[in-house]
Length: 340
View (cartoon, rainbow, N blue to C red):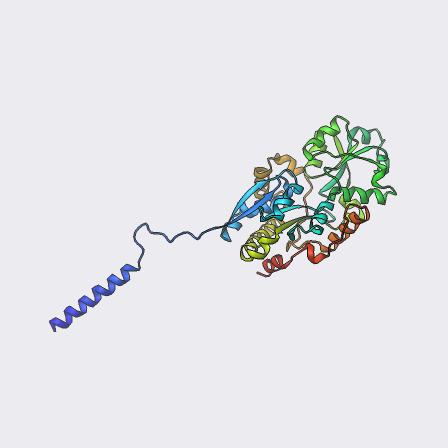
């Protein structure tokens, strides 16, 4: 009897030891899941709100992603590093150069919406010098004939907006003198009377108007071709989309969550303003005075307008070879994210 009791005690001790071997020691924690690294190019502008929110709201961390950010001065500067996969992800506006790069074999693809022109969201404007408006010399787009008008770059989305506006007024781009002015220099260009008007996006329209140098004359809402059109997009490098599909999908999951957060709260909600002010350094009151931009609830790009824009640039001779839609977009990532 004593022997069986001793055996039972010994068995219990061994069992406890085995259980203890699988229990965490004091202070022990499981190893952290290795984060997947992604390289992203961005601009310090308020329309990048969902890109910033994906980071600051922790949506990327939820997906196990660590994003390395590289700031650029313009979207066109991101095309080459994206095509070679030095950048995995970038975002930018539509331009003739965008379509030409694809036609020449550049390896990138549009995967999601990053901002559209829609009614009620006149984010882009033709801003006319205040003295010309106050004097009555410029009352409509027709009155700009022969004057200097400045988008920020040739044959981009703002030129598309300006060109279509002029055509609806019975004019063409040849009826104004086109010069190019970077966004940060636009207020001074109007103040110094170097140009009659600029073509800008927010917050520059709000900033110029608040400074008293110009007046928003026309927005994308006022031009038929831009009442519903794609303004900017999220793009993946071809290599990233093909060879790291799982990681690419994780980024899209986080991005779509940020898009929905933006749409739920709005651009002028305190938590969104905090993020925009932090990333862009634009004063809060200027952001609050800006007209919000539109994001599709499922981050789906407006594909019909992409083809319409390409055709317009082609008609102007700025795009030499048209590319088919399937070469421009890959909607598989955003569809999968929306289905979750």
